[in-house]
Length: 284
Length: 51
Image (cartoon, rainbow over all chains, first blue to last red; front, side, top):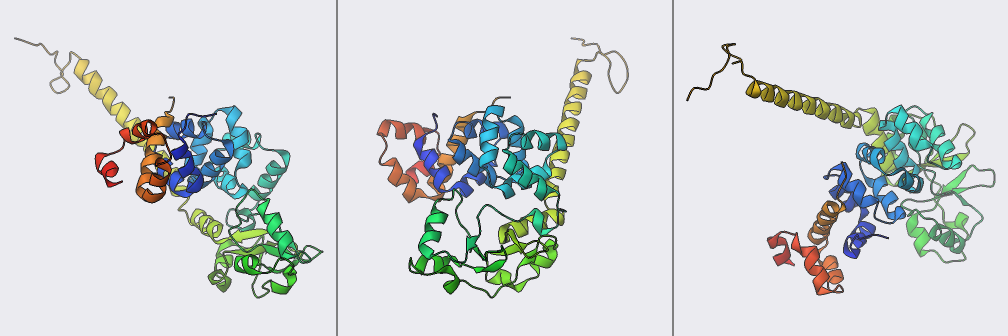
């Protein structure tokens, strides 16, 4: 499907973070030309790892036929970070490319205040029933397209939280062990309406990469990862908006430079001397 | 303005060679030498010599 060398594709597939960092240094047009020629699932992964502002700019120029597949394959939190920086017209056009389920999910997330836990939680990894065996869980997690990067949440039949299954226990436990026997129960969960600042103050972050999020009824609704917590905090403290400020400043500088060059051209080609205001004659 | 995917390919290949030289070399050794020449043609001489 593409003329992209296998060597490059291998790098992008095996080291997507490093690839995304390298691409961010390029003109958006060059990155988009590349992404449009690689398999959509690899493209989605790369777009999800790019800085949200940069990814948003990519979507503005990606061929509409490709955008639907690419945005659909991105993780919800990455799409959300990108949408938060996009103008409302872009948000609507991007949301229109998504499946109904994902669109509803993202709209729900965007309805949370920007500094609320609910706006930054991850629901791509499903909760695990406490009655499952370790072998079943391994098979379930292997079938997911997303890599499991944190301890999945174990839930009771009524949807409330039972515990967390640490990845080390998931790897080392015997196939036939029931998850409820080895899960961790010593941790705190956070409410979807809690502020990110209050969530960040929990000491449990020293031991867990992600903490479960519940609604007011205590039902598990997602996980707040450390990465998203940091991302959310940087947005709410203004670091995220610095990208927008940079873009505006860059536009101002470009406008100033083009005006200046126009002025210089005008002065050079004018027969009137700008200092003496007299007509210039070129005597030999 | 139309973008050029080759620019991205060159940058990514360079990053691969710099960050993961052993892994990159293992993969390069599997590729036809004529094709490898094309990959390396646009890379810096010190980088190519370091491989």
